[in-house]
Image (tube, rainbow over all chains, first blue to last red; front, side, top):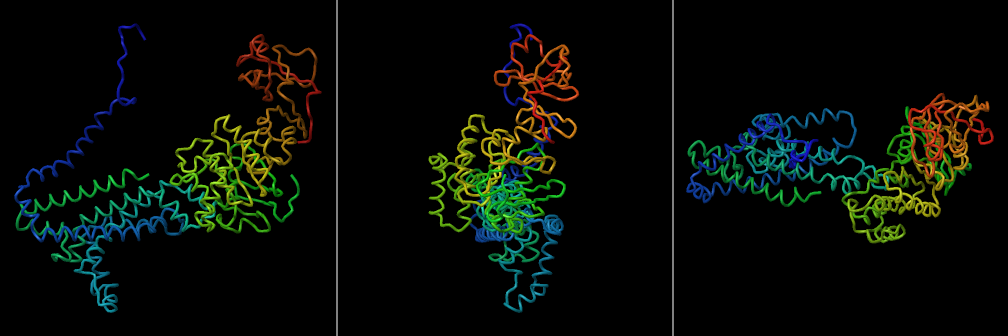
Length: 275
Length: 325
């Protein structure tokens, strides 16, 4: 330290110093890569074709179907995935690693293959589908329930893994405390485990919902593309793209808007206020 | 410590391979302090009794073997070292939790919980979440939560660690009052000699997973068998054959030259540290044996007793207690 002429500059910002360029540049590249295609789509869309598309019955049906099936799939994923995630996170059983590996398989499976696999299981002559058809006269393929089933199949791994992460980061300390206070495992699950893992559970549900909303391959392979019953937004866009590129662009923009709007609402309502 | 009655007292032998092999006995109303260095098995003992850690052996309490029961079926109250108050519940609902688990209707459970908060002097904090409580307040809630279910066995795992000295002192007095009303057996794991001396009716010293000493607090403090307890109570203890010799640091005479009288109670060493201790300066001296000695600040200055200074320590034979080790 010398004299007064070297007035120390007031340091602002991060006490650890500036973020290095070698990290900043790739991060900026990532943001551009994600934003530019979306922005281009917005710029390229003709507002008139957008209004036109909004008025069509096909869009309204597909949008309604997409929202209903994604939400149903999310609820089914919660009912099935939360107990599975709890089992993977909290119970030490033989073959746990194997079960966890199996659960993640649909994540790496191409969705078309998922559709083929679903057909073999739940198709009219499938392993489970044939007895189901004999017993009840009901078959999943080409029905709205088939769409939900396809959504659940592809989303469940994401939901399960996310919730398991939430349960693990919440830890077992409070479960232990509840046990010493006389709470059974089921009671502990309801009163302690779930409330404390709520942020992870909600994140898992949002992830599952988003994955369902975008699901295309498994749905179209398993259920075809019937307006009103199995035609969701992605399949509608795919069909439109083959005849009218402008209409496909408008539909895509509608889907983008709805997805972002739902995520923003969820974020305000749940993700931020969650403990 | 008195012999177990076998009816409502605790009679335990707990074995956790590689970590703990300890026997423990206590009558109803007893407060057993468990002391020992880190890694001695104190927390293992608590977790084995609570059921959170599987253990072999037996733990007879009120005629049943705790080890055959799951943690919820044990009727044991635990105050954890890190409290573990449920962060999503109010102080009141934290305390009511154990009663709710036992099927007590919500209004009754809350009323009983409110009564316990009142007894611990924090009734006005009932609606607060744990994050809005100070350390001492949170520990009171944790104590109320453990006692509200009238457990047969109360396990306190270092209940005052991490609290300010003043807060710990107040809470220690309060806890003593509640423990004297408590009819069950209390196991108090502690790092603090004061806890053991003021709250306990018996002391169990653990060392490397085994019981090294059992006795009344006064007995253990006066005749410590382990170096850890000697340091806890601030005594010098040196081994002399199969006997131990204990003396207070204030009985030690410090000089820079060899003492003229050829007492056998003299040692040469080097000052390693010096720190205020009450009105005195407490010196850490290392040599053939490691000892502590209290000197007056004036003497400390006069003899220049700074770290690195070679010194002679001596103690009069009359100031030494000799006992079987």
